[in-house]
Length: 360
Image 1: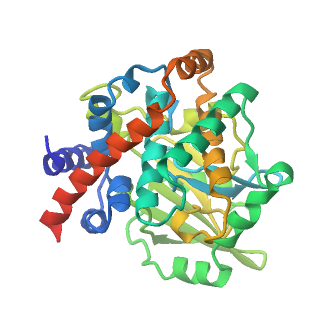
Image 2: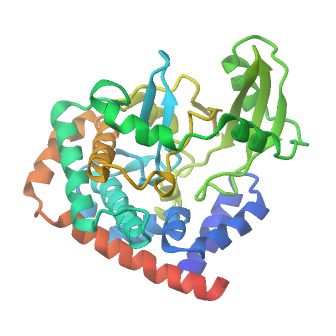
């Protein structure tokens, strides 16, 4: 099955589960043609089929409840219940039981692709070393959330430097078209629970965001409260693309709530996943941190190290696998992550060239 047949098959599977926004799928196809990193982000379904075949030795590693679609832009900031600024993985749409190596190879592959485009200055060897060091250290120490205070204060200026300007943020959000259809019962109920006062009036707009999740309906409730605006987004969820790739196993199980519950994590009090909906707060200081938007002057090795650390924070939720993972890491040759990232980057590049030739 080539990239075109895989895409057609996956999108058919998706349409059977949610009311896909067709215009966004067309937009996604165009974005995928722009560069290899965009293509990589938009095609986790393809990864789910290819990586077990091209990294056979790694696919037999101990399993965990994994992020699945982990990459260097899977991280963001939010405020915990005490108002502290926290940085970590903010996307669990593709959570699934997978070998722990999947998340690390995908993260390292994304770093390699980002380096090739100039988004990162750290080469593949150094990226892999930093990711693995952070991952091992977090497993050994039992993990801790990455709160941008005290020992992690060095990273706060980097993360804060790209926060959206509040007036621009709200202007852009409110420029989205109003939702014409009725709001489904589940997001309406979650909004009611999360807004600060009962029966707060709000207006609902449609929203387009992301790359891999383009096509999933999103809607945002915007309210005026005590001198400012507040917003809650609702996005439809489906089972991981791994369910499509595995042809029948756990076709409709969404692991988003479970992975958030068991991970070593400072929870965002405004993120909830119920049934096939995820609700989250939208604000200038609660948003993704994308590599290409960060200032050029930054400590990339430390940042990549923290990405590895945070991956382990998630994997530590699968407690029975931790000792098995540590043994597996000791037994593997030193360059396994570099070899896996190089091979998967080669496959991404091959698919992207075929896609671009057809779409451009």
